[in-house]
Structures are given as structure tokens and as C-alpha cells.
Length: 274
Image 1 (cartoon, rainbow, N blue to C red):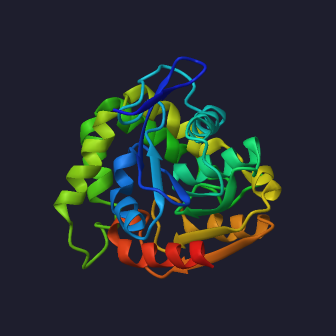
Image 2 (image 1 turned 135 degrees about the horizontal axis):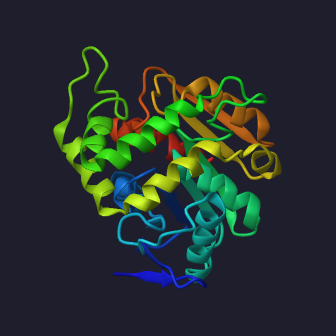
């Protein structure tokens, strides 16, 4: 399996297919590069080089006990892009991966980056604070940690078969293979990484990161997202970005890159080609 070894000795697994302008995908919590299979195959067929990595502690990367924070996530992504010498790259991130992309660009600069797209993403800040009254209270994230610690396997089934894909909405039929694949990806990763990752995605404030970025960024979000509520995420991120474009999807769930891949892929391709 292709892997790089970071300066800390962490092995980061990655996929690298095709030639052409590179598109780099950053996955959501607690998944892996496999969550991008549909997008990677689509853009490969469009003539792009597609790359996706497993975040530290996730998938096939090292199940290290520490470093599960946005600084390390961004630095690991930078190590992958440097190892592959990626230039003029388009970075695409979903959920926690959207935060990773934003922090990577702000922290490591835009010299290798052409554009970015974030979807159902955690920026600017998920947690409710005095400065962010529309965020979610800490009790929400404490409950996630408690469920993960009590029985990670059951928790992941419940999350995937319910709010993640919107299968708990009236009239929405559960697609069992999607639930199984979500559970498989989650259980491949490490419990410690996933537990610590809740703090990383919920408490990191990306406000200043967003303000620094000058490359075009497409902000994509469904207005029925039950994981990262729309109103306190996408509209605020697009306003903070210097060159941001907001695209809202009526009724789409958090996992829209999977449930509505045809729509998402077409919109990404239009943005990349524009």
C-alpha cells in the first residue's frame, strides 16, 4: 500500500490515480479515503489525477495515540502534497475534511493550490460560544464522546442509519449498503483518534483561516444537514472567504457526496473547469 512517513514517523496511507491536474480529497470523521471512491472514479474518467489519504488514526494510516488536531491534520496533508509534489491542485474536503482543507491552505500557503471546495463542512466553528451563539452546545459533543466510548460499533450503525444520510427523515428509505460501508470505514480506524477528533472538528475556530484564503472556494451545503447545521456553517464561511461562492442544496443531508453523488460531481466539475 502506498504510504508516506511524516517527520514524526507516522505512516499516512494514500491513493494516487491517473494523470493531469491533481484533485486532492480530504475525508470526514471517522471515515477514510474510501468515502471518496465515487468522486475519484468520476474525476479520473474526466482526465484528472485524483489523490485521497487516510487521516492519521483513520483507515490504513498509523493508529497513533496523539496529534488528533487540526494542526497535525493540516501538516499531514502538507506532507502528502509535498511528497507527491502536487502543484496547481484542487482541494476538496467533506465535513471534518473541509476544516482540514481550510486549515491546510491557511497554514501552509497557496503556492500549490489552485482552488478548493468544501462541502457539509465544519467551519467556521461548530461549538456554541459567546461569539458564536448559533453553534451547538458542548453537551452535543459530550454525548457523541459518551456514545463512542460506550460502544463504538453500535454508535456508528446508529449514526449512519440515521442523521448522517438523512435516513431518519420521513419517506427516506435506508440504503443498507451505505450504512455497512460507513460502519466498515469507521471501525477500520482507531477509537482514540475518533474520540479526540470530536474535539478537533467541534472546537477549532477557522474564522481567521477563512479570512486568509484568496483562491476561489466553493462552499457546498445541504439545508437539511443534521450533523453540521447549515445556518451556522456554510453562509458564514462564504462571507468570510475573500473569493467564496455559496451553493445551497434544498433537502440534502450531511452525507450528500454519497447520497447525491451525481449532482455533487457535476457541480464540482463545473466549478473546477470555470
